[in-house]
Image (cartoon, rainbow, N blue to C red; front, side, top):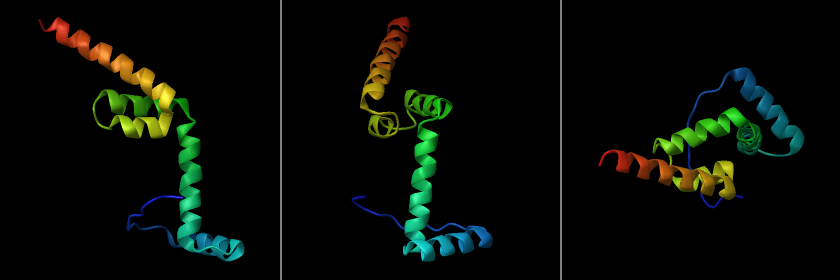
Length: 98
């Protein structure tokens, strides 16, 4: 699925861990697989939310994320349109400074 992995440490409520462990046992997966699937589902839902997508575009326009990440989240076609708009906006600011 993913080319590389990264170890992360975070705290979860005990009850949530217990539920994840039950889900892992029932589905014959380990806890990590269950949490990865849950996070992937959450992110897919978020990425289809228009407000979330607009916030991601703002992060790109403000140079907080790279174009590659923008493509991953909103798709190549929409990202290309955003990049073209950013170039026009950046050029406009440059011309206004003259």
